Image 1: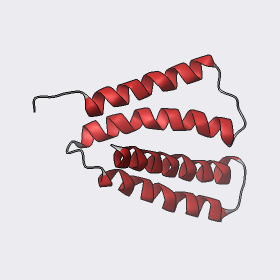
Image 2 (image 1 turned 60 degrees about the vertical axis):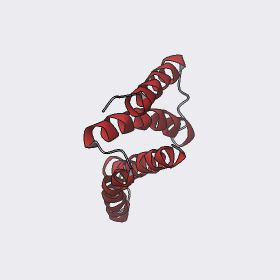
Image 3 (image 1 turned 90 degrees about the vertical axis):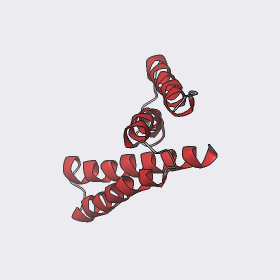
Length: 109
């Protein structure tokens, strides 16, 4: 379970970090290399989730979506210095509960 969480966090940081660099390049007129590095990181994001041991693509990506939401709230707080409000935290917590249900609910098959 710890490895699954680490892989989800790594994928989330790659997606958010890569997207953020592309954002800075296009929206804030940063140098081209921001976009190039962001693109490479986004390619890595596409690879990282394949390291999960769960057999279902859809289940892995559905669960990852919840992790992404929580990481995006944290990214906005730490990097963009935008303090999340109660509803940001509540929404992220709901998403993480959904992740737990999707991945670890007892199933017969």
